[in-house]
Image (tube, rainbow, N blue to C red; front, top):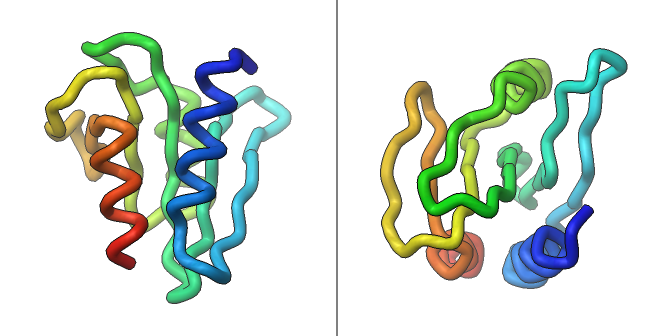
Length: 104
């Protein structure tokens, strides 16, 4: 895990509401989620961290997100815009996702 990814994950965990549980998820086949958040309302959010300002959704992330039944899925990128990346996955900046978590 890169230092940037580590700090991104730490910031998201810090912004999450009290009572949130945080996990890393990986299947034997290699599908993974960088950060899986179980919020106090029992909603599950999956988060992937990318270095590209034009991120693509990794196949393994789609598979893992479906496996766990995440209610919301995000690809955190270094840009400033938020936009959909297909089926229920949103590309979002770190500050914007932190704001969503703080408002929970």
